[in-house]
Image 1: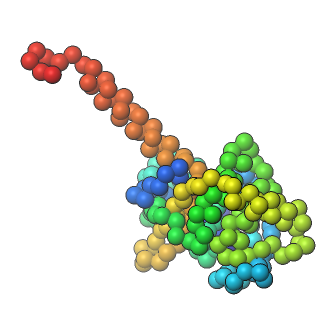
Image 2: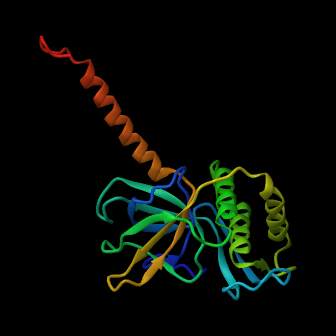
Image 3: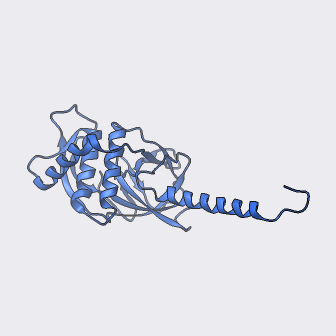
Length: 227
């Protein structure tokens, strides 16, 4: 993941809706590492085929994106908790002209990544935990890019990653989506996996308001001769 530059751009993240929302468009206006992170050094796992990423020392942990459905000057805002699935592109912050779209997750081992990301979200729901935050991100990169933490560089983090990996077969299935956007010239700038249902919750709230309005309308007294 590229180094974070909070004023302009940040490394790409991954997040997830309870159900896919491929037509959803959002704008990103801020980012933080609110749930904790670690700097970790990665290398190719010698026991697995080489992937496209050669490794390095990275910010490793869940990202917290501030977003909305209009642009950076329009409320309401919601939070998207994100895990990186693209170490090659950036999320650009505060660009009203950059629209991010949700599409199905298509990275390597997408199903397993979604399960791990959803598990990580559940663990962090009660508050920040830098070790779990970093370990979940490290496990996602291992699943996608066949990368491991350099042996001996961070034994505690390595042990936590191994623990998550052992849990993987028993984790429930989850659905993920990518967040992708384009510059005016058409260049891809981001893709992301959603696992926290803030945008879906807003949509659900809107559906509830609409349903209530329809129920109230049906209960209105009807003029004589109408059913």
